[in-house]
Image 1 (cartoon, helix red, strand yellow):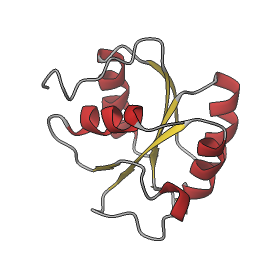
Image 2 (cartoon, rainbow, N blue to C red):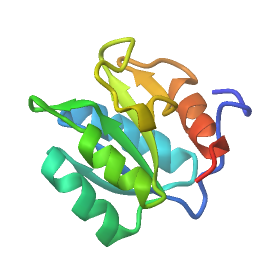
Image 3 (cartoon, rainbow, N blue to C red):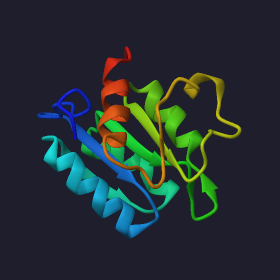
Length: 128
């Protein structure tokens, strides 16, 4: 991973929400390698907001479709409370994404190389 695509996440708390255990484990390793503190992972949409608030998340990496439920409502609530959101999906676009979140980075599964670092760097550049 290049230095530019590898943001320093030291001191940041990153919530991981994905219903695919292997994907969540890889995300956890990569976030920790960038210095971030991992929260979760959580595997259900219903757990996202409560976990993020309880654990004081700075960033949330959210799979868009978790067990047939979309994470958009949770993402809107997180974003409104200052949590930065990165979406993940097996699709190349965010279908039916709320207008307020259209600027959120999208990490397409399976990501390769610098994909996660680039998405996290992009979200860190956004204003809260």
